[in-house]
Each structure stands twice: as C-alpha cells, then as structure tokens.
Length: 201
Image 1 (tube, helix red, strand yellow):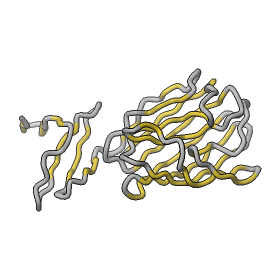
Image 2 (cartoon, rainbow, N blue to C red; image 1 turned 180 degrees about the vertical axis):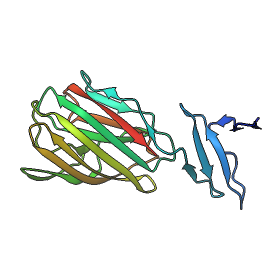
Image 3 (cartoon, one colour; image 1 turned 135 degrees about the horizontal axis):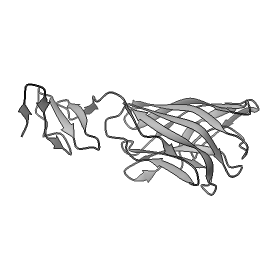
Image 4 (cartoon, one colour; image 1 turned 90 degrees about the vertical axis):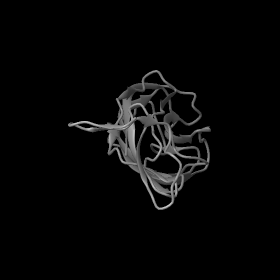
C-alpha cells in the first residue's frame, strides 16, 4: 500500500503497470534492481522517467564476451563506454544487442570507417575494419531508439596507436532491448585488458 509521509511519497513496486484506463495515465514503480519510476499512458505505452543510470564498471579481461543485462524496459538511449580494451588476437571487437530471446548475431546495417577506408558489418557494430592484438581501445558508442525496437548507433573508438574507428548503423530487434554484449567476430578470442560500463535513460 502506498503512503505519504512528511518527507516523501512511497509507492509499492510492481512488475508491470496496472490495467489501462481510457483517458487516464498512471505513475508506478517497477521492481527492477534498483527500482525505476515509470509513466504509462492510456494506450499502455511505458515511459521510464528515472533519468540517467550509470552501471558499475565491468572488467573485460579474460572474457570472450562482456554482457550487460541490466537494461530496464522503457529506455530510449544507451551509451556504452570502453576504457583500455584489447584482445588476445586479430578478430575485430563487435557490439551486439539483445532482447528476451537472446543476443542478435545478424541483421546489423551500417558501416565503420578508419584511417584505411570504409567497411560494412552484419554480425554486430564493429570497432574498426582491421584489428590487431596490439590495439588498445577507448571511446563510446551511443544507441538511440528510433522507433519500436529499432536502434540507431553512432560512435567513435580511438586507439593508443593513434588509429581510430568511426561507426554508424541500425539494428531492428524482435522485441524490446534488454541486453548488450561486447565480443569479437566469431567469439573465439578473449579480451586481455580493459573495462566497460553502460548508462541508460
């Protein structure tokens, strides 16, 4: 039961909004970890109004993939930030998006440019065109919700060797975005340094 005190309004958490009522909207708190404040309109559309949340930094070292599975429903923008990420081999690092059915490994549209030229991608948003184990990556990639379950990405990754990668593209998911992954093409190599975090709003 909700209550009002002299210092705040307490709303009991729930897993979803109550039934829609024509001509009325609702404010409610979703039982995420941590919880999130939502507005749901009379058409049943959820709008997360928590502001911006930054995840804890996660090491990538010794992993074939670093997954972020804390993205709540209703987010309209996600930023991936990477610091000092490198790998054990020559497979290009990629970013993949996922929904409740898992991570998508195909259907990415767009391309990446670096000092050597321009190339396309289909299995994930690529850091650059050609990778080497000596490269150390820094930068961020922004994902914006364009329309229902379609995300547009743009970002710039720079490397301590003075190289760079600029990427842009889109990905259409079958459901709402709930997770993001950093891995390498083929997924057979591991990261040997670095960390990453995300922020969402």
